[in-house]
Length: 247
Image 1: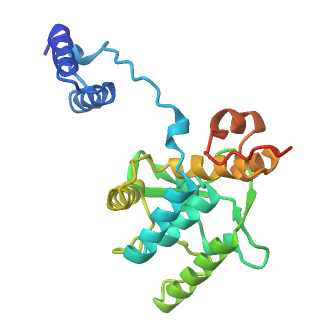
Image 2: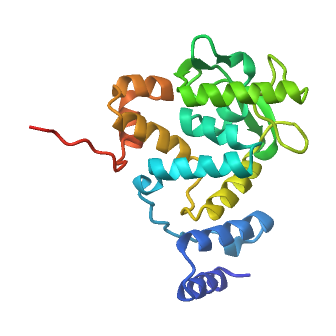
């Protein structure tokens, strides 16, 4: 009710061992449901940044995740196989349409996104890419195979539209949304006993491993839709796959 009472409550949570992120989340929830409460204002909680390098999945972990999905959640396996194989942003993956899958050229064309409307998870509208530029991402043989099989499955289920969404929800057959993907993601990591990382870690994993494979940083920046210096600062992380010089 007052500034001092809120400060006391935050100190109590700290003493009980609540993490800074937990305290910040609870305080943010209070502020959202009681915007008129002046006692909630002016409090600052410092959340130490987590090293991004710890968010990168090892290749063995990616293999384990995808193997589990193909056996236990066939509907969403193509979604995460595409994510790990392209490093798409959330809204780019959700807004991917069949006319952007160029099988003959072996690439995916990124020209648009499905972004949230007013922060509502399930409501989406078409928009441009983040930098308003088009780009192409080459497809690996594995991804070509996965998307070809997925296309056949959508045709079989009468869900295929040449200009329609590549991925839809299992139940309503509408566009994917972050909360749904998060649920599938969490239960998959729990099932294979792999430490939780955020959905966006799939982008970090793809770009970091693609750089570590010896690709030109300029080429990787182009398929990522980033400036070169931004790519190196944000996505150039250790992957555990260093190749030593042989003399």
